[in-house]
Image 1 (tube, rainbow, N blue to C red):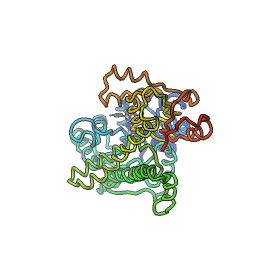
Image 2: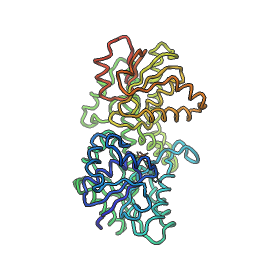
Image 3: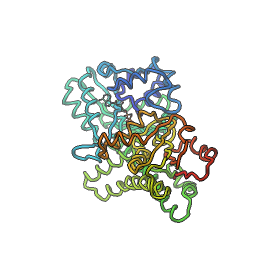
Image 4: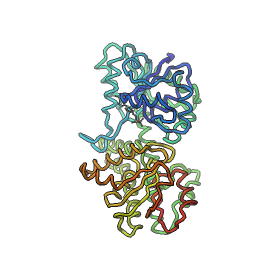
Length: 444
Ligand code: ADP
């Protein structure tokens, strides 16, 4: 079966870059990305300097293929109907209410877009799960589709995204592997082949791995859990280094040069962030408990607990370093994104550290080269609300925060600097520009 039209639901960090690369590499396929957020669609159709997602190399690709075979539209109904293959790339945050709150993935957006697919499809479809989902979600998607659309046949594939924010385009160009899970039935295998045919336009066949749906769904959670586990491992050792006089960067280098271990994901930091790691591990933990595997659940949960510990430890390090009191002290927060080369701040350690320092009475100056002021304000407001601050208190706390558009003006008269994101410009800055060597710089 040759795919001519793809529709992707969700124009975010996963949907946007993935579809841009598919459109670039498959000029014979029309790719339309739809989203219920019409402002986002407007921005994807607007200036290349202001796309909703920042990724090195993304704007160039969008500039090349937009209106050629890549389209962004708010017309969800028509584009579902037109496509033979539909990707689901909607967000799956951790549940905040109900059974599994704080642990399980909230599938309400998946459910809504599944209902849209059932409602608007007038022909058979291949539905591809791109969002990270708990194991056996495909079953639920199928149930909804079958009960709400009795005339068409749906095949569900799992094709988890392994791209890393900050290097998404390179990751999509040269994927270590593309994983496609499908039913073992003849029609399931035909659907798998249709997706293999898309990826094989640029990915060598020996890197396209086909599995059953459940292995594919679980592989995504397991990969993220193991990556995050490496970060928590090195971060737990950073605490021991600070006690013993060992140097964590030296340790990380020494360990990473062992070819059995490798150097990736061994960089010490204030903690991991992003929309996936914490969410996926909590989800894995929840799944293990669900199946009665409580020891396994606890093992993985510890990775998240060490991450929380590292953020709290870093905040305390700042407070202790400033004599135990930060009230009325001016601290410059360098970096808001959860890591360098992205404008994504979801679950960023900077949010957590800032909230604690604000509540302790510090005055904060925040600068990030890519995260917009509006986003920083929203993140702060959300965390303060989550922690139970009233709106009067939030307004008061905001008087202690200034957000800057450039590095130079953010540093005036600081009592301390805290480097929260490892953007290159901060490491250069630290070495060359901070003339007053008495001002403390906190960094892991
Ligand atoms: P991710 O990192 O998983 O890509 P994002 O939040 O960046 O997550 O993107 C998910 C996108 O999916 C958002 O732009 C959101 O508006 C969109 N979305 C969520 N639910 C629906 C839905 N039912 N129909 C269409 N778009 C949706």
